[in-house]
Image 1 (cartoon, rainbow, N blue to C red):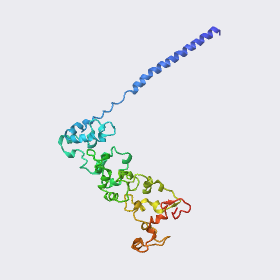
Image 2: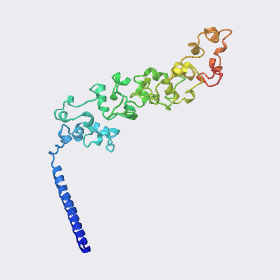
Image 3: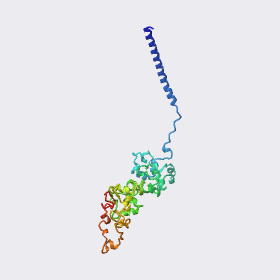
Image 4: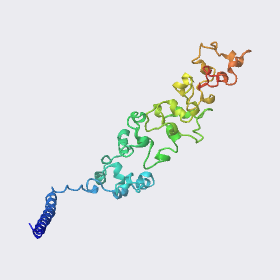
Length: 328
């Protein structure tokens, strides 16, 4: 074959290859719209949900036409902050009905039973409305907590429309609110030895979480009374080489956390406090009657100064190699 024939054959093959490539591209381009056209038809779109105002809701304007004072009071509370998307007021024209439920039947009939009234329903039912939003943080453990199981609810302590104190509580302070039930604990704060609650340095919720806790006595920190106490009194935390059993079991074995007439909020004065356990060991067991306390001619030396703790100063525990008697 001549050179000219080879060139002609090459050109023909190249032209055929180019024609095949163009055809493939054209077919592919034509197939895309068809595929899209086949994928496009679908079932009719779902019907959009009807507007809230057509499902029994009447809007805030209708509510405040009668309940004007409640509407104004709501606007002055955190629940009435429309700029916070987590509040009832953030829902356009539904701030009232977010909590009280759809109000059309109530507005048309005037029947109070047709609207959710928190002062007329069981506390636990009222709390279910609050827990629709307040489910995190300190409120997460409310269900099944001590207050919940005793038929108390959110509206027992809090008021949305007429709060008196902080956190929308019904009293001027936490101390006053808690005293309405826990009078024995509040009375102890008037004793000579007490937590600085009445001085304003602490409050009940410093130690307790009224909405629920994993600890005993609704304590806010740790899993035991001792862990709560040592969250502040860290020097008593340990661990110690020589542990004092009462300190390990719990601080309330010797101390009353709410108040006491004895120094250091002890539940009893030493040495009587110590003798509640140490009745016949080490030192001779002694009955501290009037003669030994000071009225007699020979009072016991163990009632002077800090009594037992005068010598056994490391009473919470000792890390000294020879500290098994807690004297160093």
